[in-house]
Amino acid sequence: MKQIFSSILLAGTTLFMTIALIAYPDQAFEASLRGLNIWLEKVFPSLLPFFITAELLIAFGVVKFIGVLFEPIMRPLFNVPGVGSFAWAMGMASGYPTGAKITVRLREEKQITRIEGERLVSFSNASSPLFIFGVVAVGFFYDTKLGLLLAIAHYLGNAFVGICMRFYGKEEELQRNEKQKVSLIRAFKEMHSSRISDLRPFGEVFGDAVINSIKTLVMVGGFIVIFSVFIKLLFIIGVSPFLAGAVGWFLHLISFPVELALPILSGFFEITIGSDLITKVNADPLIAKVIAVSFILGFNGFSIQAQVASILAKSDIRFYPYFFARILHGVFASILALILYKPLYLDKKTIHMDQLPVMGTIADNLWVHTLEYLQNYGPLLTILSFTLASIILLKRHVVK
Image (cartoon, rainbow, N blue to C red; front, side, top):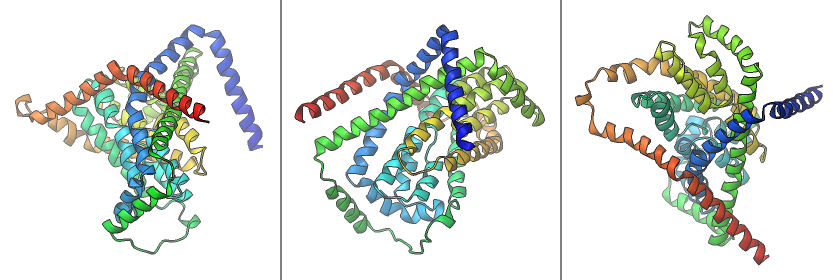
């Protein structure tokens, strides 16, 4: 019965998309172009260096080295191996879906078990600092001071999720009683052993890193475009306003502005669109908007969740622990935003501008300049990357 329902749901959704695309081709094209621009200008150029670097660090055994050093920290806190620290750090630095990509690679390398992979992926996918500070705080709220509040609520909430998920799947795995000590010698040995076990020459390793990274990012771009179109079509045919009524009822119960219903619903599908719409709503108080944005940043949105699901599909890591963790992250981030709103935002806002440290202004400008740089040179980097990938594939085809 479950499979029949799934078949009907998938067929019905695809049929709906097809009919809607035929009925509203202009609006669909506009939404598709918007999603493509986001991917071309920001997502691809910002994530590609991290993806390639992660592939190289895994191939050269550096991740094994990090894993040995951080085992005494990661195992007690999150009940994952030390190599999980690499996925966690890279996931926070570069944003979604880097954590899922690295987790799957670690699973393919058999450096983590399936249960450990499911724990790790639940807290290693976070929004990047560039998105929180540059896009949300500066680009949407026009208030750089909100960036610190949103970032701390987001990353601290993510850590709480990892601590909660450490108890997941304990009944399915063997108990680990051994306690590992930090050892630089053992870390170097593990790194060397991992490197020499990979018989590929450097050129092939680098080529594989580029090709695998670009393949993943092309898939990510496809999800961004299709969800951008899907959200637009849902709004045009009146489904979004209908669903927003239920969200509005819930917001009314918790004394939130009901005007946020449709923007929050949009954020459930795609966080960039949802965050933008939330900040444009003419509703008070500001803290309600901050809490709403914090929730959808933690929830990730169905677009990013679909990207993660497609990456996890290549392994035996199941999706539902990650989905549960997203709800947990949204709740934690919202509560932390509420608690920290006064000490991290209101109290700092009362400080006179002359009393603000110069470094704070420099950091604010850094995010703005980085975002502008990606907008100006992102498409060029994307085109050059595709050219490099084409050359690598062509050379391999000629050699064969």
